[in-house]
Amino acid sequence: MSLPSSDAATTPLPRAKAPRGRRSMFLRRPFFTVALIVAAAYVLAATFAPHVAPFDPVKQDFMAMMQGPSLAHPLGTDSYGQDILSRVIYGARYALIIGIFSVLIGAAGGLVIGLAAGLSGGWLEWALMRLIDSILALPSLILAVAFIAILGQGVDKVVVAVGLSMIGPFARTVRADVMQVRVQLFIEAAQLMSIPYLRVVWRHVLPNVIFPLAVQVTIRVSEAILVSSSLSFLGIGVTPPTPDWGLMIAEGRDFVSFAPWMSAMPGFALALLLIALSIVGDGIREEFDPKLRRGA
Image 1 (cartoon, rainbow, N blue to C red):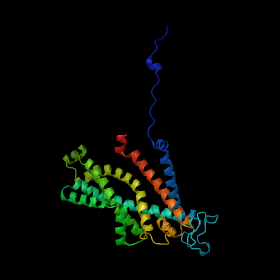
Image 2: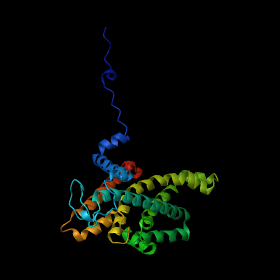
Image 3: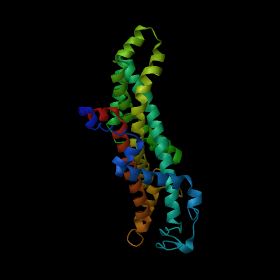
């Protein structure tokens, strides 16, 4: 006697979908993976610059001025005989330091102003929104130039100037997120339960704002590096003989006809880092931003 066939026994079980983990993200986004590797290489070179750079970046050798790429100097030398490879490596350190710390300053200022504008209401919200609009009306470079004119030149001054110029975009992002969170039912429930206002902000509003702000930080680092390099290129940012890419490009523009490597090498290093950071920032935003994932 044969048993009746069962559809459940013959039908194969559906395969469970693989979870969207970090490893699958690298496989699904090859450009993101390559850009992340490039950005990590810059970070490692900047961190271990004293061990990687073959020469002192500010040591001058007038017997080796404007030499082309060679075994002794793979990227050539500048008009002071300084090794360009060493200066490019140390330039990555200054670029990342200025970019990261200026973005943190902008994020901190934007968080405070955005929270105040989103939670206050009335004339204070109106005044803060006019402040944000006035900041956003001007490009970050123009604002940074204005702040540099007040603060003066130097690495620390550039960090502060670029950071202040980036408060507007962060404040707008934070305020938009606060306006969405403040109308949620759990906020109204917390207020009905007579929970202290600062505790509601700390426990319920701030956690919903921090993550979108962190995503914006990863995106804005490349912009901060570009603005700081532009200040140095204009001669109002980092002062010589600091190995800054913008400063190196400016110093080499007078010799571009017969020593193009002086500007080309730091220019290529700057462009490659900006492209890598932009791809990494966009990849993180597209992967982890809840708004984009809901729309996908």
